[in-house]
Amino acid sequence: MRADYGARAVIDLAQRRGKGLTQTAGIAARQHIPESYLEQLLTTLRKAGIVRSVRGPAGGHELARDPGELSLGDILEALEGVTSPNGEGAGQASSAAVLQEVWSDLVNSYQDFVHGITIEQLVLRQSDREARSMYYI
Image (cartoon, one colour):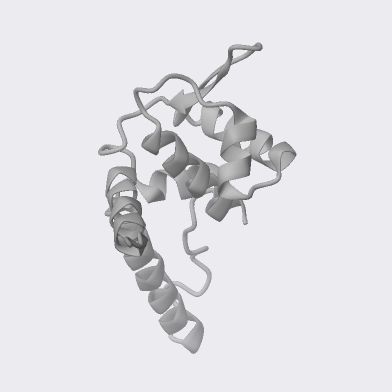
């Protein structure tokens, strides 16, 4: 849930980029995320340099990086940590070594995939989805 909620929050901030600070309560309501949990996620994203936050009644959050240069992988790594194979079985002539190679390939493919998707691309996908779902009378 951390990665899902965190990515939704970042996409929400990207959609509002250039419109000033966005308050936590607004993000929580739009994205259906518990506000107290969202605050924790935003703190983690701020420490990772993805979000900039301002405290106080007129405060809020905004992206600290351009959405075109920020990948989904950056968010996942900030919230979940780097996923990498543990190296057990490497160099052994056993099924453990073969499986380790497969897990390593899987992790590398996953990393390439999530780092190849920018937040800007996700915002555009969301806009396209909203445009297709509009009903006109």
